[in-house]
Image (cartoon, rainbow, N blue to C red; front, side, top):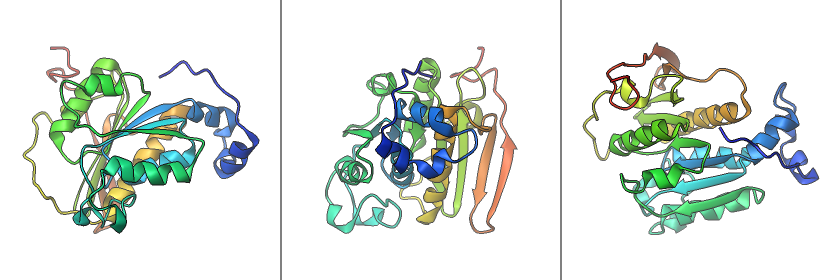
Length: 251
Protein backbone atom coordinates (compact mmCIF):
# COMPACT_ATOMS: atom_id res chain seq x y z
CA UNK A 1 0.00 0.00 0.00
CA UNK A 2 0.95 3.59 -0.50
CA UNK A 3 2.93 5.46 2.12
CA UNK A 4 0.17 7.99 2.66
CA UNK A 5 0.83 11.71 2.85
CA UNK A 6 -2.36 12.42 4.74
CA UNK A 7 -4.14 15.62 3.78
CA UNK A 8 -6.72 17.23 6.04
CA UNK A 9 -10.44 16.86 5.46
CA UNK A 10 -12.44 19.97 4.72
CA UNK A 11 -15.51 20.81 6.86
CA UNK A 12 -17.69 19.89 3.86
CA UNK A 13 -16.03 16.48 3.62
CA UNK A 14 -16.48 15.85 7.35
CA UNK A 15 -20.19 16.55 6.96
CA UNK A 16 -20.47 14.48 3.75
CA UNK A 17 -18.91 11.41 5.39
CA UNK A 18 -20.50 11.97 8.80
CA UNK A 19 -22.32 8.62 9.00
CA UNK A 20 -19.33 6.46 8.17
CA UNK A 21 -17.08 8.52 10.43
CA UNK A 22 -19.35 7.44 13.30
CA UNK A 23 -18.40 3.78 12.76
CA UNK A 24 -16.08 2.56 15.56
CA UNK A 25 -12.42 2.44 14.42
CA UNK A 26 -13.23 4.19 11.12
CA UNK A 27 -12.63 7.76 12.35
CA UNK A 28 -10.96 10.71 10.67
CA UNK A 29 -7.66 8.93 10.06
CA UNK A 30 -9.46 6.21 8.11
CA UNK A 31 -11.26 8.79 6.01
CA UNK A 32 -7.98 10.57 5.33
CA UNK A 33 -6.51 7.29 4.07
CA UNK A 34 -9.45 6.93 1.70
CA UNK A 35 -8.89 10.49 0.49
CA UNK A 36 -5.28 9.67 -0.36
CA UNK A 37 -6.02 6.32 -2.01
CA UNK A 38 -5.97 5.54 -5.72
CA UNK A 39 -8.19 2.77 -7.08
CA UNK A 40 -8.68 1.29 -10.55
CA UNK A 41 -12.07 -0.11 -11.50
CA UNK A 42 -11.48 -2.36 -14.49
CA UNK A 43 -14.72 -2.47 -16.43
CA UNK A 44 -17.79 -0.22 -16.09
CA UNK A 45 -20.49 -2.84 -16.50
CA UNK A 46 -22.70 -4.73 -14.07
CA UNK A 47 -20.01 -4.90 -11.39
CA UNK A 48 -18.06 -1.76 -12.25
CA UNK A 49 -21.02 0.62 -12.17
CA UNK A 50 -22.20 0.03 -8.57
CA UNK A 51 -18.69 -0.43 -7.18
CA UNK A 52 -17.69 2.90 -8.74
CA UNK A 53 -20.73 4.57 -7.20
CA UNK A 54 -20.00 3.34 -3.69
CA UNK A 55 -16.27 4.02 -3.84
CA UNK A 56 -17.03 7.54 -5.07
CA UNK A 57 -19.61 8.05 -2.33
CA UNK A 58 -17.17 6.73 0.29
CA UNK A 59 -14.57 9.35 -0.63
CA UNK A 60 -11.78 7.45 -2.39
CA UNK A 61 -9.46 10.27 -3.46
CA UNK A 62 -8.74 9.13 -7.01
CA UNK A 63 -10.61 6.56 -9.10
CA UNK A 64 -9.66 5.46 -12.60
CA UNK A 65 -12.30 3.62 -14.60
CA UNK A 66 -11.31 1.59 -17.64
CA UNK A 67 -13.58 0.24 -20.38
CA UNK A 68 -13.51 0.08 -24.18
CA UNK A 69 -17.19 -0.57 -24.93
CA UNK A 70 -20.23 1.56 -25.73
CA UNK A 71 -23.59 1.42 -23.95
CA UNK A 72 -26.14 -0.98 -25.42
CA UNK A 73 -29.82 -1.41 -24.60
CA UNK A 74 -29.19 -4.90 -23.18
CA UNK A 75 -26.81 -3.38 -20.58
CA UNK A 76 -29.51 -1.37 -18.85
CA UNK A 77 -30.95 -4.11 -16.64
CA UNK A 78 -27.84 -4.04 -14.48
CA UNK A 79 -25.33 -1.32 -15.48
CA UNK A 80 -26.91 1.39 -13.39
CA UNK A 81 -24.64 4.29 -14.33
CA UNK A 82 -25.88 4.02 -17.93
CA UNK A 83 -29.33 5.29 -18.83
CA UNK A 84 -31.49 5.16 -21.93
CA UNK A 85 -30.09 8.46 -23.15
CA UNK A 86 -26.55 7.03 -22.99
CA UNK A 87 -27.05 4.27 -25.57
CA UNK A 88 -24.26 4.57 -28.11
CA UNK A 89 -21.94 6.52 -25.80
CA UNK A 90 -18.72 5.09 -24.45
CA UNK A 91 -19.37 3.59 -21.04
CA UNK A 92 -16.48 5.53 -19.57
CA UNK A 93 -17.98 8.86 -20.67
CA UNK A 94 -21.43 7.89 -19.42
CA UNK A 95 -20.04 6.86 -16.03
CA UNK A 96 -17.79 9.89 -15.61
CA UNK A 97 -20.73 12.23 -16.09
CA UNK A 98 -22.69 10.79 -13.16
CA UNK A 99 -19.81 9.99 -10.82
CA UNK A 100 -18.43 13.52 -10.99
CA UNK A 101 -21.84 14.87 -10.01
CA UNK A 102 -22.14 12.38 -7.15
CA UNK A 103 -19.01 13.55 -5.34
CA UNK A 104 -16.98 16.51 -6.63
CA UNK A 105 -14.32 15.85 -3.97
CA UNK A 106 -13.20 12.70 -5.80
CA UNK A 107 -10.88 12.92 -8.78
CA UNK A 108 -12.28 10.55 -11.37
CA UNK A 109 -10.60 9.81 -14.66
CA UNK A 110 -11.33 7.37 -17.44
CA UNK A 111 -9.46 5.31 -20.00
CA UNK A 112 -11.31 4.18 -23.13
CA UNK A 113 -9.05 1.26 -23.89
CA UNK A 114 -9.00 -2.53 -23.97
CA UNK A 115 -6.87 -4.03 -21.21
CA UNK A 116 -4.25 -6.26 -22.80
CA UNK A 117 -0.77 -7.67 -22.24
CA UNK A 118 0.86 -4.55 -23.64
CA UNK A 119 -0.84 -1.97 -21.41
CA UNK A 120 -1.97 -3.77 -18.25
CA UNK A 121 1.10 -2.90 -16.18
CA UNK A 122 1.03 0.75 -17.20
CA UNK A 123 -2.67 1.04 -16.36
CA UNK A 124 -2.33 -0.16 -12.77
CA UNK A 125 1.23 0.67 -11.76
CA UNK A 126 0.40 3.83 -9.78
CA UNK A 127 -2.69 2.67 -7.86
CA UNK A 128 -3.27 1.07 -4.47
CA UNK A 129 -6.08 -1.35 -5.30
CA UNK A 130 -7.46 -2.91 -8.49
CA UNK A 131 -11.16 -3.85 -8.55
CA UNK A 132 -12.37 -6.52 -10.96
CA UNK A 133 -15.37 -5.30 -12.94
CA UNK A 134 -14.69 -7.48 -15.97
CA UNK A 135 -17.03 -9.88 -17.75
CA UNK A 136 -14.39 -12.34 -18.99
CA UNK A 137 -11.66 -14.45 -17.44
CA UNK A 138 -9.05 -13.74 -20.09
CA UNK A 139 -8.76 -10.15 -18.85
CA UNK A 140 -9.16 -11.20 -15.22
CA UNK A 141 -6.17 -13.51 -15.60
CA UNK A 142 -4.14 -10.64 -17.09
CA UNK A 143 -5.06 -8.34 -14.20
CA UNK A 144 -4.36 -11.07 -11.65
CA UNK A 145 -0.91 -11.71 -13.11
CA UNK A 146 -0.04 -8.00 -13.24
CA UNK A 147 -1.32 -7.37 -9.71
CA UNK A 148 0.74 -10.24 -8.33
CA UNK A 149 3.87 -9.04 -10.10
CA UNK A 150 3.38 -5.43 -8.97
CA UNK A 151 2.12 -6.53 -5.53
CA UNK A 152 -1.21 -4.73 -5.92
CA UNK A 153 -4.32 -6.00 -4.10
CA UNK A 154 -6.92 -7.36 -6.54
CA UNK A 155 -10.59 -7.54 -5.52
CA UNK A 156 -12.13 -10.22 -7.71
CA UNK A 157 -15.82 -10.81 -8.30
CA UNK A 158 -17.84 -12.61 -10.95
CA UNK A 159 -21.54 -13.28 -11.53
CA UNK A 160 -23.80 -15.66 -13.39
CA UNK A 161 -27.59 -15.55 -13.20
CA UNK A 162 -28.48 -15.27 -9.51
CA UNK A 163 -25.03 -16.41 -8.38
CA UNK A 164 -21.86 -14.53 -7.53
CA UNK A 165 -18.37 -15.08 -6.14
CA UNK A 166 -15.85 -12.86 -4.39
CA UNK A 167 -12.20 -13.25 -3.42
CA UNK A 168 -9.55 -10.74 -2.39
CA UNK A 169 -6.07 -11.41 -3.72
CA UNK A 170 -3.22 -10.06 -1.60
CA UNK A 171 0.06 -10.93 -3.37
CA UNK A 172 2.50 -12.88 -1.18
CA UNK A 173 -0.13 -13.13 1.58
CA UNK A 174 -2.60 -15.55 0.04
CA UNK A 175 -3.67 -17.44 -3.09
CA UNK A 176 -4.24 -15.66 -6.38
CA UNK A 177 -7.04 -16.03 -8.90
CA UNK A 178 -5.16 -18.70 -10.82
CA UNK A 179 -4.76 -20.74 -7.64
CA UNK A 180 -8.56 -20.79 -7.54
CA UNK A 181 -9.03 -21.35 -11.29
CA UNK A 182 -5.90 -22.98 -12.78
CA UNK A 183 -7.07 -22.82 -16.40
CA UNK A 184 -8.94 -20.06 -18.16
CA UNK A 185 -12.56 -21.28 -18.32
CA UNK A 186 -14.56 -21.22 -21.57
CA UNK A 187 -16.51 -18.00 -22.01
CA UNK A 188 -20.29 -17.94 -22.44
CA UNK A 189 -21.44 -14.85 -24.29
CA UNK A 190 -23.87 -13.40 -23.70
CA UNK A 191 -24.21 -14.97 -20.26
CA UNK A 192 -27.39 -14.75 -18.15
CA UNK A 193 -27.50 -12.30 -15.25
CA UNK A 194 -30.18 -10.81 -13.04
CA UNK A 195 -29.46 -7.12 -12.50
CA UNK A 196 -29.30 -7.16 -8.71
CA UNK A 197 -26.72 -9.97 -8.62
CA UNK A 198 -23.74 -7.84 -9.70
CA UNK A 199 -25.02 -5.07 -7.42
CA UNK A 200 -24.73 -7.42 -4.42
CA UNK A 201 -21.23 -8.50 -5.34
CA UNK A 202 -20.09 -4.97 -6.22
CA UNK A 203 -21.20 -3.69 -2.82
CA UNK A 204 -19.10 -6.41 -1.22
CA UNK A 205 -16.17 -5.39 -3.42
CA UNK A 206 -16.56 -1.79 -2.27
CA UNK A 207 -16.55 -2.93 1.36
CA UNK A 208 -13.42 -5.02 0.81
CA UNK A 209 -11.67 -2.11 -0.89
CA UNK A 210 -12.44 0.34 1.91
CA UNK A 211 -11.54 -2.17 4.63
CA UNK A 212 -8.26 -2.91 2.90
CA UNK A 213 -7.30 0.75 2.57
CA UNK A 214 -8.07 1.67 6.17
CA UNK A 215 -6.98 -1.71 7.62
CA UNK A 216 -10.29 -2.58 9.22
CA UNK A 217 -11.89 -5.99 9.76
CA UNK A 218 -11.16 -9.31 8.04
CA UNK A 219 -10.71 -9.63 4.29
CA UNK A 220 -11.82 -12.48 2.02
CA UNK A 221 -8.27 -13.79 1.59
CA UNK A 222 -7.66 -17.53 1.26
CA UNK A 223 -11.34 -18.21 0.74
CA UNK A 224 -14.02 -17.79 -1.88
CA UNK A 225 -17.29 -16.17 -0.82
CA UNK A 226 -20.15 -17.64 -2.87
CA UNK A 227 -23.56 -15.97 -3.10
CA UNK A 228 -26.68 -17.96 -4.03
CA UNK A 229 -29.41 -15.42 -4.69
CA UNK A 230 -32.15 -17.94 -5.39
CA UNK A 231 -31.82 -19.47 -1.92
CA UNK A 232 -30.44 -16.27 -0.35
CA UNK A 233 -27.37 -17.98 1.08
CA UNK A 234 -23.69 -17.17 1.43
CA UNK A 235 -20.99 -19.76 1.96
CA UNK A 236 -17.21 -19.71 2.25
CA UNK A 237 -14.91 -22.18 0.51
CA UNK A 238 -11.26 -22.41 1.51
CA UNK A 239 -8.78 -21.60 -1.26
CA UNK A 240 -5.18 -22.66 -0.82
CA UNK A 241 -2.11 -21.25 -2.51
CA UNK A 242 -0.87 -23.73 -5.12
CA UNK A 243 2.89 -24.26 -5.21
CA UNK A 244 2.65 -25.06 -8.91
CA UNK A 245 0.63 -21.92 -9.73
CA UNK A 246 2.29 -20.22 -12.75
CA UNK A 247 1.49 -16.78 -11.35
CA UNK A 248 2.26 -16.88 -7.63
CA UNK A 249 3.65 -20.37 -6.97
CA UNK A 250 7.19 -21.38 -6.11
CA UNK A 251 7.78 -23.19 -9.40
